[in-house]
Amino acid sequence: MELHLISLALGLLLLVPVALKILFPYLWLDVLFFVDIMRIFVAFVSRRRKKPAFFALDRFLEQVAAVPDKSFMVFGDERYTFALVDEQSNRIANALRAHPGYTPGDTVALFMGNEPAFVTTWLALAKLGSPVALLNSNIRSKSLLHCFNCCRATVLIAATGRLTTFAVSQQNPKRTYLMKNKVFNVRCTLDPSDESCVRDGMDDGQTSSVPQMSLLCASGLPKAAVLNQNRLLSALAVLSSNGITSKDIFYLNLPLYHTAGFIVGFIGCIETGSTIILKKKFSASQFWDDCRKHNVTVIQYIGEVMRYLCSTPKKDNDKEHKVRLAIGNGIRAEVWREFLNRFGNIQIREFYASTEGNVGFVNYVGKIGAVGRVNFFYRKLFPYTLVKYDTERDEPVRDANGLCVKALKGETGLLVSKITDIAPFLGYVQNEEQNERKRLRNVLKKGDLYFNTGDLLKIDHDNFIYFQDRVGDTFRWKGENVATTEVSDILTLSGCLQEANVYGVQVPGHEGRIGMAAATLKKDVKFDGRRMYQHVVSYLPSYARPRFIRIQDAMEVTGTFKQMKVKLMEQGFNPGSIQDPLYILDDRAESYMLLTAEIYKSIMSGSIKL
Figure 1 (cartoon, rainbow, N blue to C red):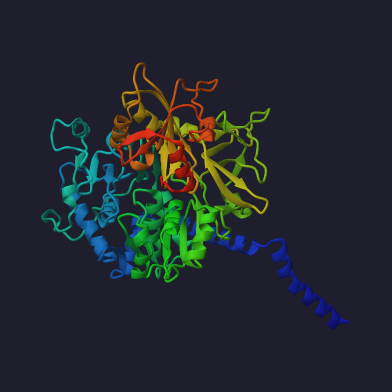
Figure 2: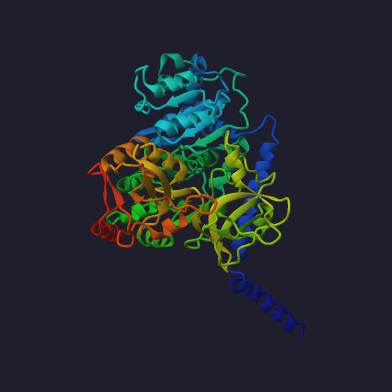
């Protein structure tokens, strides 16, 4: 009898894992993810309690002491060890300190593309205690000047040739603006072989304490997001939490001025001690050859990167590489499947996050198309929810009590995350209006405070989270956020447009939304396609230039006089169903040309790439 009971007990015990696998197929992965989160949290708290305070720079110096001769960065045929990067950053710091236009602690605007000087200069400024504003290297004119203002920058460090938009002439109004606002271009001091940089190290005791507001990301007109040292400290764990170690070789071809490249790539590799293969810019044709040449094991992406790679001609050696992991965001489900089928069994870690946001998700399960998964334990640490959203009124739906209405499973809703000590909202520099727009009050109960992500997401019945779209005045194209208010302002300065309503429209086969503007003309003025082309090319980076312009007799507005976007977005750019004149940006003709039915068909079929 006892033997029978023991056998029965063992049988039931063996059935437990099977039952759990059937009833809760992702339980073990959920638990492992939470363990990872707790490990990161404990490490973060431990570092924050250190005296003096421990920051990302300190982790870099730990790596320098531990593995000085290990390659930290490879750029072209040049290899930079941890010790060499440290030495060059010291030389730059010494040169900066000797420069009459700079004082340690000044806020510095960094205007560089992907190059070793970006890394060494940022480290130098960290050693000198200077907050750094990372400027989008594509911005120009009005946007560039605005970024100096909103970041309170007093020093500009630019790569050689980056300031070609500023003439040497003292009569240039843009240059005069910089001089009046005490913005100095100290690019000449960045050569580590310069005579003024002869000292190899920083003098003892001269490294400044780093301010809390240590990093600003300013890429356009509307706002500059703040990242303090606590945020950078938590960012150290981004790569290690995804199983990346010092043995990995990380391929970094996304812009360093963008938080994806800077935080995930650069800061992440400081923590893990991985080697960075740094590229000036993304090249689909060179991508896999680079990976093979450098034995790359981890790649970073945005959705467009994956689509571009899948669009290259197929080769027999597509699966011959050592890449085991791809980490990023914005990949569509169909591209995800195509990528795996073509390039082999690469683990894809899709995540959701934003520069200023206080919540993020990681698809640790590998569910195709999802950006993450609802995890009970994680949700306790970082309370978030999806609420119903009225796209016509551009605001959350509220009940009779004035509280937001939760979105049901399978229903698209606005992602909001509770603002707490663990998950703060740092806001934007000198822009309290934008800060208040991001704060959502009385969400689930009176008096509570949540961060409004501005993103629409959906949670399915298996608790997987899917990104749906953006709301408000921003859309995403070519991996960049495009602020519609900025583009509208630029368009109305063209001389022929009275008003411009900018929005994004979907194009088959493309990630995100491409820019389109519905505009009205000034009285007795005709639309000049060539003049408009020259204007947008002069003032806007390529990804922000409206590809389509729709000329209307009058601008449609809501009852509260807000420009209507949803209806226009739904109508798209089909000349067969829109009576208004439609124009398309044509780079070959250097003009906006009439959009014909033939051109529209070519776009929809994929014959014309946008």
